[in-house]
Image (tube, rainbow, N blue to C red; front, side):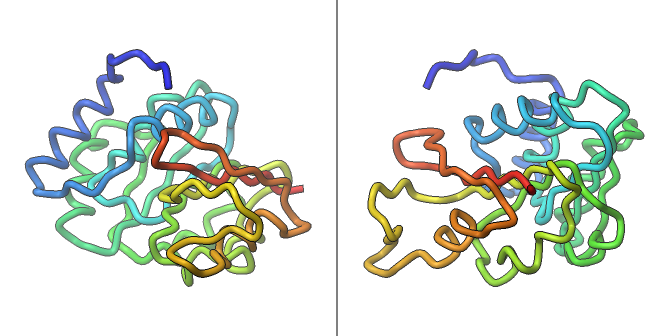
Length: 188
């Protein structure tokens, strides 16, 4: 994948805060660049469910070109505080120390970034109605799969299959690196 090694200032700041917080599980740069590109096309309210220390949110923020707002929720108080530090002087981003479900009433969302690490919380039926028509969901942390149905660790990957076949969405799996893919799903 070809990409500039330069990082937006807000993303560099997020990496620094994340390291100081001792948090090393964050959005890959490949995913981040995709988020920034998609955020540049959006207005309205965007959200990230599961902020961590704020790197994914920083990538979203780096792409915003309109009067959009970004809401992000992190259940861990220490991480939520670290993420809030990144955006303390930015009215575009609001960090909530809360479960992602507290953001459900703050939509509909034009762009929603989700981590597939906890499949039960990002099922299509839990998320579909949170998006505006034309709204985009980005689910990350997939391992590329070339078979159908999609197999992961010797089993059918039901989360991936669900997102790629739900009639409420037009969806595609996109490799962002040789060892990583995301699902991009647009609400019909």
